[in-house]
View 1 (spheres, rainbow, N blue to C red):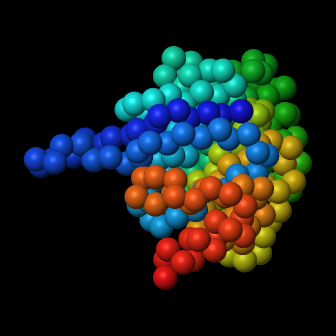
View 2 (view 1 turned 90 degrees about the vertical axis):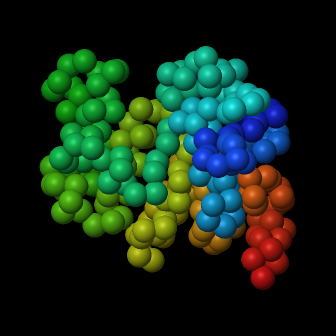
Length: 230
C-alpha cells in the first residue's frame, strides 16, 4: 500500500514569485490493484507518479510505501516500486534487451552465466526471445516498450508504475502493452492520456493544476475530465 500525506512539491523558479508549486495538498491511500492518473499536460501527473518510487521527493509531507518512507528508505522503495518511462530509450541504457535485463539482475544474481540464462528466460516469457541480442535501436516501438517493462519486472517489484506506457505506440503494440499490464499480478499505477486504458482501471484520479480534482470510478472520473477539457 502507498500513502501520500500532506504532500506538496515545489520546483525552483526564477522571478519574484519564488518556487513553483507542482503539487499541492495531496492526501491519498493507493491500495487498489489497478489505478490510473489522467489529466492535461502539465497538470502534475508525472510528478505525482515519480513520488511513488522516490524519483521525486516531497517538499512537504510524506510518501510511504509498505511502511517505508521515500525520504529515508529510497533503496528499499525502489526495489518495491518499479518505474517505466514514456520513452523506453530513456530506460534501455545498454546495447541489447538481454544486456539491460542482465543489468537489472546483477544485484541478485552474481554468477554471470546464471544471470544471462535468467535474462533470456525473462525475455522469452514476454515474446522477446528472438530479439534478445538485437540492438535496441533495431526494435519496433512495441518491442522496446516490452523490453523496458521486462527490465523492471525482472527486479520483481510488488508495484509497477508506468508513465504513459502506450503514448508512443501504434494500435497493435498499444493493445499488446495494455493487455500485458492488465494481466500482471502486480499493483499497476499508470499516468496516461489513453482514456480506454484508464477505463480498464479500478480507480481513476484526475489531476488538474497540481491537485486531485476527482477520484473514483473510471466512468465518473473520465466523464469529469471530458467536461473539464470542454
